[in-house]
Amino acid sequence: MDPRDDLPLVLVVDDELRSQEAMRRTLDEDFRVLTAGDTDIARQLISRHEVAVVLCDQRMPGQTGIEFLKEVRERWPEVVRIVISGYADSEDIIAGVNEAGIYQYVLKPWVPEHLLQTVQGAVEASQLHRGLQRLELDLRAGPQALRARRQTRLREAKAVFDFDRIVRAEGSPLDGVCATAQRLARYDLSVLILGESGTGKELLARAMHYASPRQNGPFVVENCGAIPDTLLESELFGHRRGAFTGAVEDHTGLFQRADGGTVFLDEIGETSPAFQVKLLRVLQEGEIRPVGSARAVPVDVRVIAATHRQLEDEVRAGRFREDLYYRLAGATLQVPPLRERPGDILPIAESLLDAVARELGREPAEFDDDARAVMVGYPWPGNIRELRNEISRALALGDGPLLRATDFSRKLLGGQTGAAHAQRTSQLTGGTGLALPGSGTLQERLDAIEAMVLREVMLRLRWNKTHAAKELGLSRVGLRAKLQRFGLETK
Image: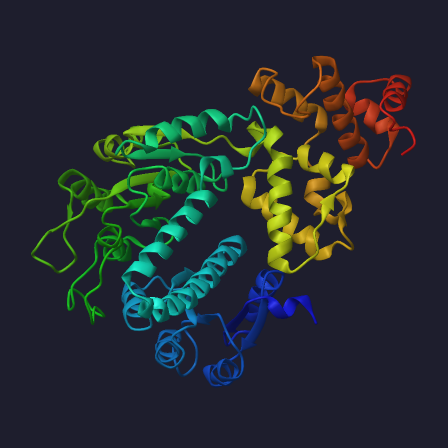
């Protein structure tokens, strides 16, 4: 049996062959992909295959994407629907949400990483939908059995999203962040989480929710940078039927659905000043007013917001309201990027390796020493998200259970020099933040770090001792002596 047979099936519908192929290349490593040049072929494919997600272009000859996805919703409601368009037409977006029930609206030109994340989220939504259908059948078991199952699921969720499950090395700079977050979780304060994209801000917010008195309530996520303001207000606060063109039925907003729980507003720094005014009013008054409604609805939610921007700078520049900033920043947490906590790289990589191998249906794998050296020597500008992508690629291309440095992309092999990396790490951590290795005397730990740096430089320079000695500021004799000392000369 082909291991790829277990991968979720995605259908791409686009009349342009180049667009089909571009999306296929982006998605092919993580999904099985079918393509259709028109909606007639797409109907036949959905009828014959168990499709999880449909990606459909909006502007096509004949039937539009929204019209086709509306039909998909009626005939195959379990299929998650995504529309792609080069036109930011708010009426199309609203019609898509209300009539076709689309999961996400992706604007052209799309970014491969964002498209991949959107489809991954859609597949997860599809799996959750099927799980809910099974739960509905369990309603016959009665309230007592359902309450017991709910408590079991809650305990499982708490175990998965506990602060201790946030992977890091002993002595990681993230320890202090988690300790502070765990103390803040007990109090109903608004929290602002700052950090670069891919550092795990949502994971920290989930841990806070499940450690809070609101743990029995919902945890609702909205990426404020992913949808236009005109739709964001409706998505968060809801709307009434007839409030605008395409509003054919009442829509309950996320704030109302999260009543008694936590709302996580990701990328809050991407919102417009006009929307910020509306959000401020909600936070001040503790009630929402759905679009088109004359009646306010009280809501009891805790707001945790996150952004990759420095909001204080945005406030000074006039792009973010100062009063909203102080409403959101009841307490502020700063999640350091991966390059500032290099000791966390290998523990996170090991955890991701196990998870990705299971997702891809691969046998368990491990990294060889050269692969470890390359990972530690790279600055990871895309943080954990980039690390996960590299591991997925290495697993897909590697042979056997051992992943080698050559299985990574060329940019990793040509990454930051080990010497500069070690020097910067020492400056950032004061000599204590690097958790490699985790035991031994000071000299033993320094020797291990020196050996790691030497291995990374030699590997990247293909064991050219002349170039390596020049980069490290050593003579060839000095370099040879160090290689012999650490048992690397045989390479």
